[in-house]
Image (cartoon, rainbow, N blue to C red; front, side, top):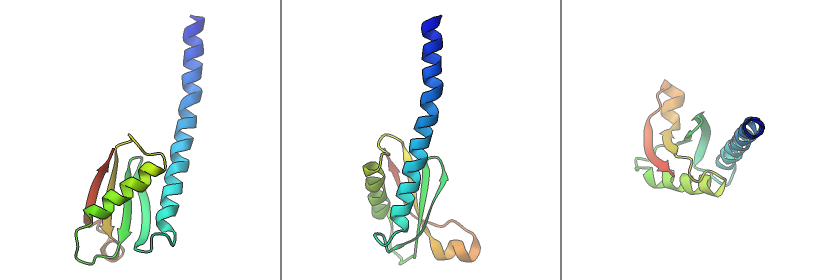
Length: 109
């Protein structure tokens, strides 16, 4: 019984720390894409725990390759094995109409 209580208490304390790390990593990645390092990105947002959207201007090209690049940056910042969905969206359409028009997608693993 004592071992079970110890295991339970360790588990309860471990999950908030893991959540804090994920929140910190999410914010770090978001700031990377909002910085001057990524001039094509006009906005970036986590719309759920594992969906990351980056807004770019639509130049008529498919953006799946850029979404894959975003996956690489996510992996470099602690998101390996997290099954994050990246969507590259048309920022102008979002601002004008409120519609999330998808230009490219990648499933990061």
